[in-house]
Length: 271
Image 1: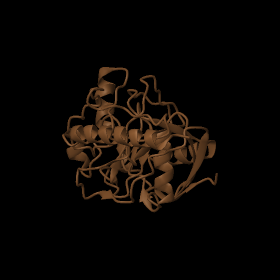
Image 2: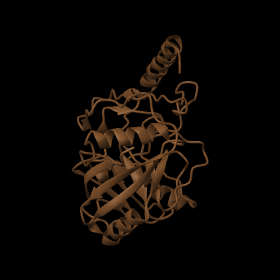
Image 3: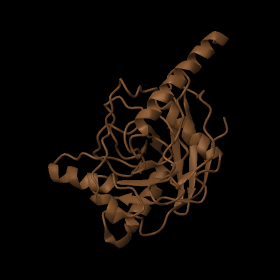
Image 4: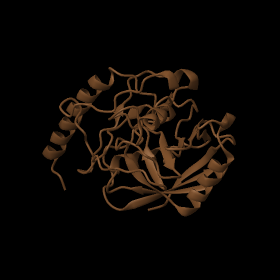
């Protein structure tokens, strides 16, 4: 067990990291959430960028906007991966009206094993396995938000197809700009891939992970910039396939699901 002195030192380090990150994150508006994309060919790259990075309430305006940079200097934004059992859950200072205050998760998080999270949706259940060993901060955040009822009654506001095949959820406002009133560090190694069955966090750049996540229903080509939180079970994939088969509103390749999808409840398995 850590001593009181060690706990104080750890708290001081976390505070310093938070101050550094806040200064850096305040310079950018964080809420164009999902995924800045690279596909194999240049045309596909540009197409994927339009698919994922414009996540505001007005799709026409958002897709015309240039994507935010997804790289930051490690000297200015230290990445805290939670492997020491603590995470930097930092208050969001953007002042966005689409944020929902449900408090901030405890800094101390589990760093071993997995935990199960079930999304009961209007299209069917989607079972998720959260990887607490490899994505402790994201896993702890998703479990915390589920326990707070944050996801209950919220829409999955975005569906994409083609080089990027994902369903995006986790924004109570349904605009693509919403989330909780905190952020936490992105945890990537640079070797991440996003095959069918992947659960990953959406973000608007390193260090802006929050509540929005995406469920991959077909192998997708993305830069390794998005925390892989865990996996989707077979029943969940069948639900995703049905959602994808129903299409995207207006016959587009990127937009709201043609048949609206709502997360009715999110339940964390008992330990």
